[in-house]
Length: 318
Image (cartoon, rainbow, N blue to C red; front, side):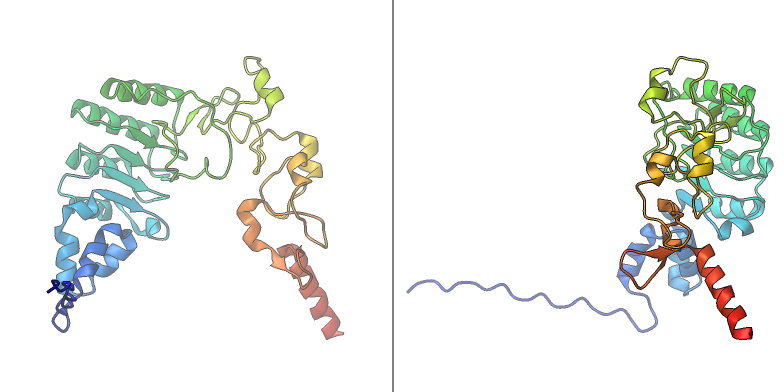
């Protein structure tokens, strides 16, 4: 007799959690949540609150973004980072106006193994405070590899030289990347995972201010890179096209008018769709502001839409 083929039995379903207790999968999802979701889970129930507050791994990478940025003070930041129990690796503060040099220094003192500090637009911080933090990490044998300082007040070339010197001593491979940096909306974002540079700012060769410095994408400009007239500098010294990242001449600024607040060179301006009323385009960043019309492929800008609405109201009043 031929042997019968064995059939795999269907495994029994996992037992359901007791009434009132969260599912086990929810505990696994905690590691993928951002700070607002973690804080919300903290207050859902006792078990979730204990899991969130008692697991230092959930707090090793802390990112504070708007709208929470406006509520974070030195004391709040110290309490949040204390959950990492000294194992904080990445601290990203975006526009935290109420965080001071002293508050951030206290956080770093309790977490000397932090490797990333992002503090763009944290106007309560200063260049002197950032230097003290990097010096502290250097004395503690830390390994700080990335700093994001765009928007810090009082940053000078002297501060930048000290910071780079200390970072290179602690991390010989952390030399400032001199490869070209091209302007676009991704390069201007503070949270840019493709940016491998140790520091996001440099000294502008034109105005000598410490800001993000961009190279030009135009071939004829890059050929004269060693010339005194090369268009390498910050955005305020050399306006850049939002689409291609190249420099924009004063004539292009006048002729290539956009429906948004960004700028675009004339070559790129000619290639993008435009408002059917005023013939002005949106850049890619503000394409969501287009008001689609009944005819396929046509749109109206916000300004023209508001003008049409005001004219209709005036006609109704008459």
